[in-house]
Length: 256
Image (cartoon, rainbow, N blue to C red; front, side):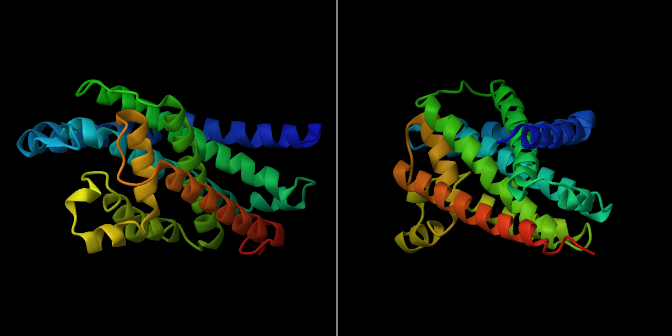
């Protein structure tokens, strides 16, 4: 990346980080409170009745999934809201006419989404220590999975923002697609508990691979192959990036 492009990327990334850091009470605290309620209700209250799952206490089993759920939600929402705001205020047009390549614009916004997702994931992980001792079986898998997953959903949020016409449009995908897929992604249960047919159906959900790879990093257990999980992540990153690059380089949904 040439010097001027690096300056552009750094400026975009700094703007994105300042954006969510400035209003940290709205961007970083609510996910921690929400996950604390999950820990109390599903872990402490319901978990004590469920017993073990996959050879671990129920709380230990669901914590990686809950952390990943917060990362997914915040990576997506940060980019979707930020990019759409820039588009609505016609700020994005200044970037389009500036000598800044599309990949730099994408990297700046996606980088901001990834950093917010990682920040929230870290905060939720710290909160979880109040309820359970976190085991780390494979640190490299944890780091790789959380970064790749953040990139996937940051790119998804960017696509949503490109096509959105109103602020209501950026809430449709999270409400009707992202939330159901996340809850059905093995966060609260093992796929082995499902009938064989529904196990097969569940494996069509990409979030299953992300949650299980992340859980494998902590507990060393997974319902799907780790190699398959990383392959799915790689395919989604490549496909979504290619699509986003096409949209932004052509100015689709961006030029008035």
